[in-house]
Length: 242
Image 1 (cartoon, one colour):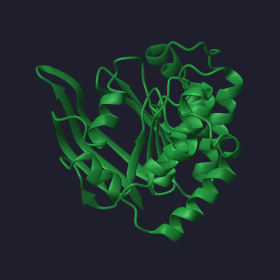
Image 2 (cartoon, rainbow, N blue to C red):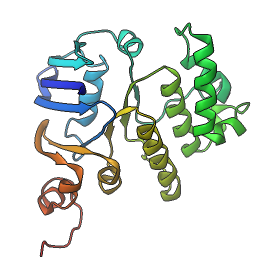
Image 3 (cartoon, helix red, strand yellow):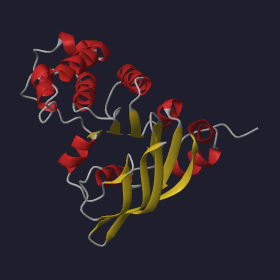
Image 4 (cartoon, rainbow, N blue to C red):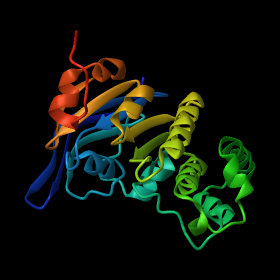
């Protein structure tokens, strides 16, 4: 069953059409990658799903309910949240305080305590740094904190916008391992990522955007083998097909 169904989604900024009538489906518990070159419309798509793009049209159904036009805070309460590009942690607050902020609006104290335990089990470095100011964390630690905050909002569907951006290769390994852990725990994920090889390694299905439209889609393993994907849209080097 699909957790997210996007139909004929359009996003316009004045006279500029950033997204042009795209259709996307994300199965419950699945991981879908949204790929494409810079300016293809990937982040605009995520912004529309979260209610941040005013010029959005079409239909966005989350767990069967049309949420297009809802305010972002209502979408978060419904169970969908986003880790934006650049992490955007509260630099002057401690790790612990950042996590407390993420639970504002929740009333289930016992469940929050259990969720915190799970977060620290998933991100042990955050437990070690819980009294440290978030602004003093490394980029990879801040990204883990951003993921942990999203989990503590009680999200069932997580949108990830360029989680590996600006991170060293070893740190990227850790972030992708954590994303796989989230999927194993049953979270549904929609991933926007410039590191195409890594995204296709962990995704079940992928869509490729170019100029605001979907130009390719299919199982991630099939797209990974596609020379057309590499040459036409992402500029990757691939060996020619035998």
